[in-house]
Image (cartoon, rainbow, N blue to C red; front, side, top):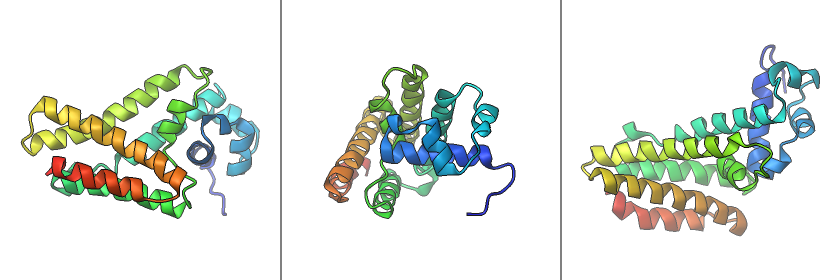
Length: 186
């Protein structure tokens, strides 16, 4: 892989995202990120003066924003947006042979308390995804409170399905979730 100048920090964050997806938060050590990214050891202290915690938070925020872009309110009707979000997860899971899950979930369940800011970051990311869905549902004519509840159900169901897909090595859990949620998003 050709290394581009000035991209070391981004390579490290991208590697931390990959490690979060595949190994969980405990699998994101400085040594693992350096090995995965090919970055020199001094890069950590230059780009992440607060060390591993800063790197992990940068990674989960980047991943949260990237994943959130797949909830595209401009894509049309709510069920079409739901399908697009689920399709993103199907591709992610199948392209990684079911090794890559959600890095946000990984940090939520695998934070040993050594990163107190993680809970806030995870909460903000999940809230942002729900808010995008809520706004879409309101625009489609659903009442605000109903939209808020459906958005929470959708994110919870999809994220849970991603976990089941990894365990079962199948996209069937996502298929079931989208089949059950679609009528609610019509």
